[in-house]
Length: 106
Image (cartoon, rainbow, N blue to C red; front, side, top):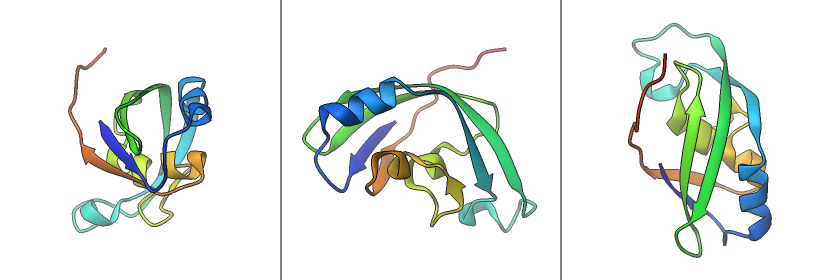
């Protein structure tokens, strides 16, 4: 996915992201799907993250996640409904600009 931060990307940000594996996140049913999904907390694992700086405030973020992970909400936090989120890990606001599924694994 392509991510924009509320501040400049630092080398420490890239180290933090690229050094994170097996991150367990708690995701309350996202606001955008609440009308069609049961309200509940889902525990999902981000198995691996890899970030590359695209510009002063932009990242390409590659994620390997457990099935059912709400990736958009992992990036921006969904008003605190996903914890931790990428924004929380970096101590800033993060938003997703583009999301593509690159593959599925059994």
